[in-house]
Every structure is written in structure tokens, then in C-alpha cells.
Image 1 (tube, rainbow, N blue to C red):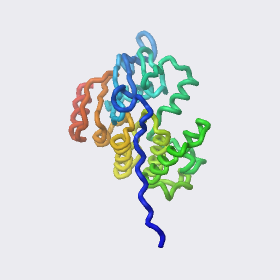
Image 2 (cartoon, rainbow, N blue to C red):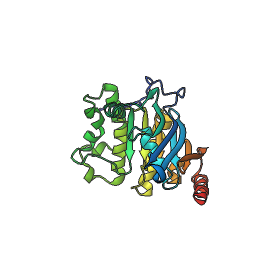
Image 3 (tube, rainbow, N blue to C red):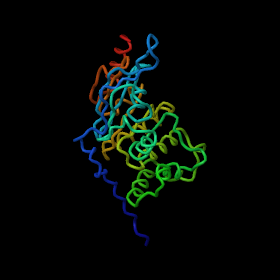
Length: 268
């Protein structure tokens, strides 16, 4: 008789990173201003913004269009530079890093999930998920391999590993993007409108995965969204208006979050 397969243990959270566990925020933004233009034509996208992203927590950033939320994410992730102020990832001040150092930091310590998926069309699902290791010039360790296998099973991608992106639905493509972002167990994941191109069911599935990654595995996540339903999955919601942080609430219902957004839009 063939023995009954035993369930595989769920991989435990990473414990080798001192920024995990809440003692030190995974990222800190200090007095950041971002300006475009000069003189009378100067526009401040961010104005003296300070923010902590707690380790192991799911933080949503919301605000009206033009409030500076995407600019804040890009600067915190090292994709753009601040006009003034500092950004720290753990204890690393990224403000003075050069392009090569920033590229290496993003590759090894940050994961990204974008609205447009950003999968490599010529690679199959398996190769897309393992792309961060390939870019870093190494193979996944045995522990990382077990983690990837668990992600693939949890995200329902086991039957899709040899498929290319054009053979997948939007929801499936975004699940591949999430698996890729989580594969290296980065210090912090930035999700920029991750449900923007998905229907409501696929969007809920993606948010469930992000929530589980944070709650069960200690993954630190910062998500920019305009959707109160998406924000309701987060532990904390930070609101921006006119380039400033104007309000913050702990995990709340979509209706409560929507009410705050309506108030901000009335005074915008």
C-alpha cells in the first residue's frame, strides 16, 4: 500500500534579521521633502514627512490623487531620491547610497508587487518566481527552496509552473508576482495598487495572501492603495493629503476608512 503523504510543515518566520520582532522599525522616514521645479514653479510632492513602518506589520498608505502616496513609497524603496530628509531601511541609511548600492539593496532586502504585474513574458512561472535569485547570481538554499515550494502550493500555482504569463489570468499573474516578491523573504515588501487590475474575487485572494504573509510569517508590508476595501486588510492605515501625513488609524472597516477618505477629499 502506498503510504499517505504527510503534510509539510509551514516554514517559520525568518529570525536572522534584527529589524524583525518590533524592536526596530523595518523602515524609517525622517523629515522627507520632495520638490519638483524651482522658484514660483516649485511643487512639493512631500512636505517634511516622517513615518515608521513597524517590522512584521501590514501598513496601508492612502490619500486623494496627487497626495504624494506613490512618491513616498518610491522614496522609501530607494526608487527615487528625496530633496531633503533621510530614509533608513533597518539601520541602513539609504539616502547617501549610490545607484549600484541601491540596486543591490533593493535586490536583496526589498520585494515589489506592482499593479501591472511586471512578469518577464519569456520566462515561465517557475523562472519568474526564482528570478531574484538569478539576478543575485546564486541558487536558492534548501530552506529557501522549501519556502518557495510552500508559496507555490499556498498560492495554487503548482499546476502552472511551466506556463508563461500570457497563459495566465490577471489574478494568477499577480499571485506569481507575490510569490516572486516573497521568495527571498525580504525585509520589506512594497505593494503599489496590487489589486488595481483585478476583479473583486481575484483582488480579495491577493489581499488574503498578503495578510497571511504578515500575520502568520512576520512579513513587513507597505501597500499604497486608493481602495478602502484593500486598506481594511492592513494593520494600520496612514492617510496623506497635500504631501503631508494628516491622519492614521489602526485596522478598521472599509466603511470607516472610506469615511476618512471622504473627509480628506472634501477639504482638498
